[in-house]
Structure formats: C-alpha cells, structure tokens
Length: 341
Image 1 (tube, rainbow, N blue to C red):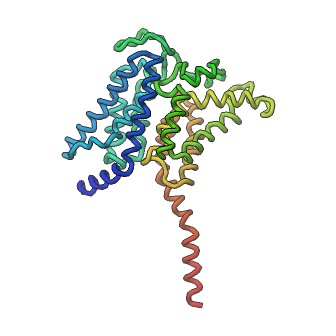
Image 2: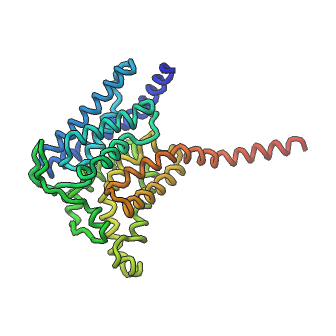
Image 3: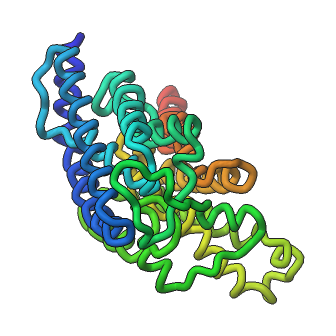
C-alpha cells in the first residue's frame, strides 16, 4: 500500500511539480518589494519560513522511511505563500507555527503530495489568524523602522479592510496602490508586481484563469452592487458608478484578494479540474469571501472561504462529470431502445 502511494505521489510530482517551483520564484520579487518597504526583516521571515518548510519535509521523509525528494518544492511554496500573508512585525514563533501547521496538518496528515483536500497555506494561515489575531491582522506602515527581533514597539494599524468595514473609504493614491505603499501583509499590496507575477504564471499555464477570473468578478460585482458605504447604498447606480468602481479597486487590493487569486485559488489539487467546475468554484469562492469580509472579523477572510470551498471542490468535479456524460448516456439509452425494433 505504501509503495503504491509512493508511486502515485512520484507521478503527481512529475506532472505538477513545476507549479510549485514557479510559485517559489514568483515570490522572490514580492519579497524584494517588501524589503524595500519594510527593511531586511521580511527577507529573514521568508528565509525562516523556507527553512521550516524544508525541515518539515525532511522530518516526514525520515518518519515515513522514504528518500527525501529534492524536486518537491511544495512545502517551500506553501511556506512562502504563508510568509507573504503575514505582517512585517509578526513574531518568529507565529510564522513557524503557521508553516508547521500548514505543512504537517494541511498536507502531510492527509497523505502528503497531491492527497490533501485543503490548501495547506490557507490551513496554516487560518490556524495562526484564529490563535494570534493581533499578531496577524495588524500591520506597520511602509518605511517604518522595524527591528529584526523585538517588534513590540512598532506602531501597527488595521489594514484598508478595517476602514472599509467601518463604512469609510481609504485615501490611498493610485500610485501607492500600485507600489503597495499602505499597511498590508508583506506580499499582497504591490499591484504592479502581482500583475507581473500573474502574467508569468499565465504564460506557464499555472493559473486556472476560469477560477481566478470568476473569483475576482464575483468579488467585484458584490462590491459594486452591495457596497458597505451608506452614502453609496442610498444612491442610484448611474449616479454613483465612478465612486462604486473606485470602491471596487480598494476592495480587490485589500484583504489579500488579488494575491489569493494569483497564489491560492489555482492550486492544482484543491481547485476543480473541469472548466465549468472552476467557474462555479471561483464564483462561489468570491461570494463566500465577501461574506466573510462583510460580516466577519478577519481581514483576510478569503483564506477561510478557500477552506470551505476546498471541501466542495471534489463534489463540483463529480457534478460536472455527470453533466458532461449526460448526452452520451442519452444516446446510449436511445440506441438501446431502438435495437429491439
């Protein structure tokens, strides 16, 4: 049984292993931008996350008595995705717990590579977000002086989502949005770099566009038609169209929404295989993410929504497979009825 599982995982690694390598490489420009905004601490955070993910992989290899696979970059990619979701002031132990939870609980507890039903990075993030919300949901301002070790004296604030949740409108300029010059997790703010990463991943066919675009479209439509700002709610669409579009811009950039569409939604083993399933998955994920943001207390509600939708991913695949097989079944049944005549 273990030998069969090992061979299946090796076949899966040969098929999808390049995805995780690309995710790791695309995290590099985001790390560089975060170092420009917050100093050297983000680099050290990402290195600690990488080391923790790699050590977890080696530990599991020893416990399961198998050879460590250096070609498997999945743990490292999950670790970097988690690190870039953290603020620059997060404590070292919180980051380590997040990576260990994501890798050991989210991935290895379900059988390892390709066997996990939930996105390991989302699992790790949710564990520490629930356990240490003040550590994970409060962010320093860009260009702040952040010590390498003790960050307790650094002033932190809520992100743009807290302003939007209270019915306000952020005053961040377009150029600051593009460069990520606002309080946010390490890798989720710089829109220009995120779009460049998305372009590369698209050329490598690593992003499942049907899921990612339907996710962003659902989020944008909900924000446009159901804004949280009272002055827009009681104003006709045609009179407040520009203001609503401006609000959509802020909502998609905040709360790691754009980051999640690029680095989380398209994970090969938690996203549906069929295109129709991906569209439905992305649309439902967008609706659920905005529901968490509108009525929840966590700014990055998309990670919670991803875990919920991961539980429905396999079911969506089965439903779509049945829909695609209906014409063939009908033809088969029709042929069987005509045969006796």
